[in-house]
Length: 233
Image (cartoon, rainbow, N blue to C red; front, side, top):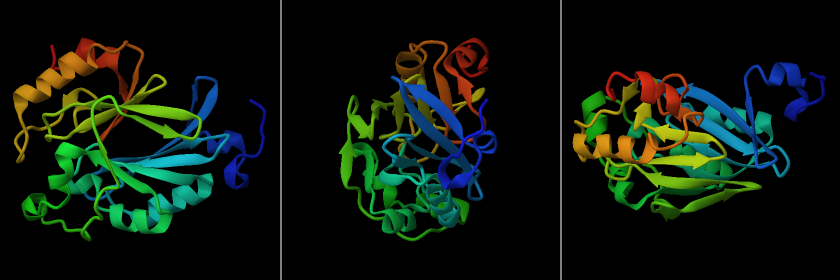
């Protein structure tokens, strides 16, 4: 690989060790994963290598770390995308929103979770009250981020408005599907039957090679989960 300058003056050979790069319809998508907060939630910073437009998916905690990542990647954050409204995925939402001015987008059925104190009482964790969403998402909506886009896949079960985000061979699965695991369905609004239907009817019908970036834990693929996930076989 030729060594050239990446955002922030980092040599590509070092930059790629931490930042994943995907080719989507001929465009380069930057993808950085940050593990944040006491529940080790995955926050993703994604963006276009050419337009520098970007988005943050699930800013669960550690706003300073997220904002530092945005600045290092030199991205103009257009959206903060929430796979659902639980506090371990929204804890840094207020600060990231205030610092970037990005639009907050969440499924219409999960707005209630943004203001629900149950998980705070359940976990003993509290965060600043999140701002209201700017955009309510529905199944099949398209979110344009520079020169690539993501499609909303409504996957209720872990929460009523849980979603996955699909685009260019990548799926951000939130707390619906994990590496050899699935989301819990015993929290308020959860439904185990819906969760299994969402996974089997919406996600496992995707091609094996789809790369899955979940809300917790390591990444995986649809094929690996179809073959070996103990909750699905």
